[in-house]
Image (cartoon, rainbow, N blue to C red; front, side, top):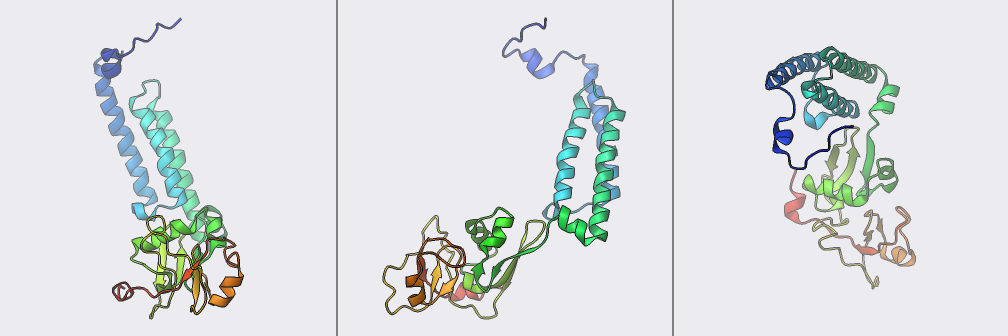
Length: 241
């Protein structure tokens, strides 16, 4: 029967039960595994963090466990860990080759680029394929300096998760996304009489005021979040490119 653990045993917490020479072994293990892993990573080619694909992210997670265990667990032989690391990196290289050569493999493994904003309107059906909400897309647009959906001609959600935005040469009235809805939501219209075009407060779809007054839900996103007046972006925001 194992001895009971003594809580807050500083000797156990900081030094453990291994001999002092084991620290030298940890140093040796770390250098060997690090150098071996770095060599294999250089072989498959590196990408910047902003360009990590789904395969690269899986590589990082898998290597984290394989590399970490071998550095300080004495019962894990180095050759076992090196074999696991080799297999992980080899599989990653194989998947990268398939992605590079075959479009079908790229779509299956990496996903595909999706249009998420077209003609100043958020495409909620496309967002559903990536489990994203209009609020998240609006946040990503604000990071790129967009204050109004009327500034956007088209925006694509790339396979790697980035957002590519193409602005209109001349902004049109659209849904303002600054300030954020959770900070200060746009004022919903109660009286549509004499109004120009209005926007769905969820997806930004534009409607004539008369038509919007008859629709309980937006025909594009099927939400009943209400309608607000379509407005032009501020000149300072519209001029940013």
